[in-house]
Amino acid sequence: PVYVHDVSFWCKDQGSAREEELAEFNELELMNLMLKTGEGLSSVAEVTCIDKYNCLQKCLVSYCYRIVYCSCDQALSKSQAADMQLQLRSAIARLLKWSVR
Image 1 (cartoon, rainbow, N blue to C red):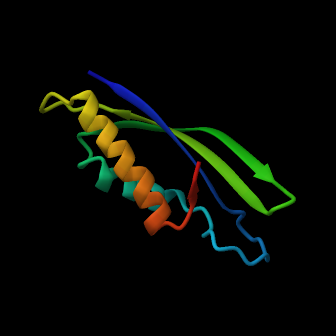
Image 2: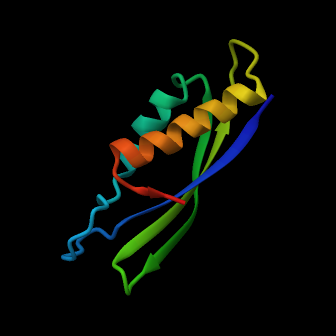
């Protein structure tokens, strides 16, 4: 089975001079984090940025990514996919310093 989850978060606009608690966006860091929390490459089948919104007043950017979880070597349950998604959301806030919505 395939499970689709979305994750949205706010981060600081790149090049912003404004001091924020949030870190700047780095897609490579996000992808590495997805692979770690997705229990390796075999559980994350697809990652797509489906939305981006710039808030010019606050110098913030919101991203929404769609993640498709699937495992080719073992059965992946709905609860396993949900757990990976929860771990990812927690890691984004804790390690990348972005505000998960």
